[in-house]
Length: 252
Image 1 (cartoon, one colour):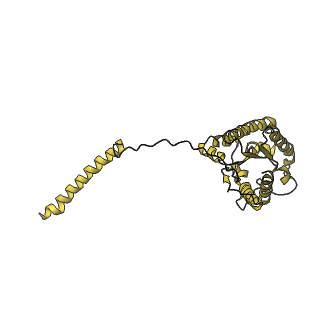
Image 2 (cartoon, one colour):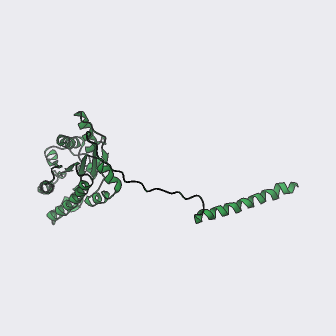
Image 3 (tube, one colour):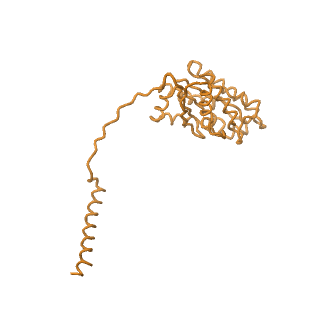
């Protein structure tokens, strides 16, 4: 009896447990366990921006992200602070800008339903893009570009496509497109880039002139006569970001 209790009974119980575990595990793998759950398709929710409150969003590259700003505020955070200082009811900004982004990345980002929902819920859309398309190529920094006009046109076409997508999602939003500045103006070749920067900014104004709700935010003069670059000598410093944000606030 003692041998039965000490040896056979535990062994039998273990064997039964193994059998039940094996059956259950097989059922799990074959999908035979549980009860099916009927998931109703979600209804499409109509979203819109508030009428009496500024609801900003910023998209694009590292300039939009705020890289180089030691406070971490960047254009978006400083814009919110500036508007609130002026007693303008403003929501916290939604910042979905990505370091290193180019126009193709922005095009891809805007295909997301979640991003489109965020854009639809905003009434101020800030776009900073194009710099990495043009300045990202080392050839722009060291030698004269082979075909700068073509590079700018292709970049501008993609930017226009993204703005068209934004406008399709949100027909009434104010869209602020950040113009370029020359971060290499103090380098030997940098001064030769200034005409290209001016040409790009002029092309921006020309391309979007037909939409009265699009504002081109000029920034080149902010950095042309004063050192307002961050420690990386490419992105704006705290002061540079503040001045860009102030220009947007002036136009809202």
